[in-house]
Image 1: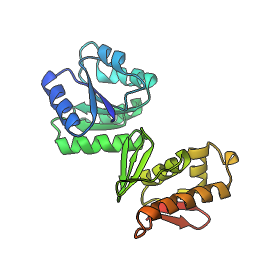
Image 2: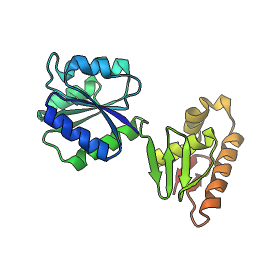
Image 3: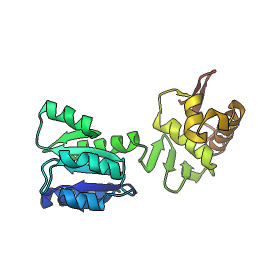
Image 4: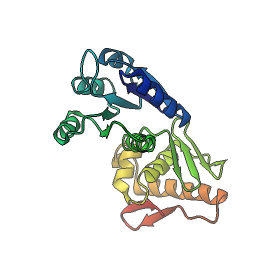
Length: 219
């Protein structure tokens, strides 16, 4: 379950967002000013929803400090819609910006996108495949694929980049660290084993496409 820090001094808004997140299977933590936000922020936080107008210090002043403690995604939430300010916030390290009042659906969509971009999304889905990135469990049609850690990481990268070609060099870097830690045959064997495990569960579906001499992509 993704842990999201809500930094918002308006208790009504904070409670509303907390309820929304809980209903959608997130784990919300609240802070009502900049000082409390810096105390509660740590390596377990996956995303921050940050109000700009805070007691003791404004949101702009603490973005850098929050990033230094744990470089997770930050979505700025504010009633200010000035374009120049938005650009400045991105320069400071914010990942996204949503203007108050916001629609719940839009907030949830932006949260999901931010978690995906920062590699923090804990439950990832593609067709009938579901990944739990905390427990390293991969299910297809509800059945455990029993993937090894490297097979799991390969499938996760492909799903996070679905529709795009993922080159072999990227897969080497992300899974083994460098190309020197594994060779092309190692990668091919892992992909082949993963395909076989998927085929045992669902023989009707071809999930992974080989792009000759380049890499792989999800169909």
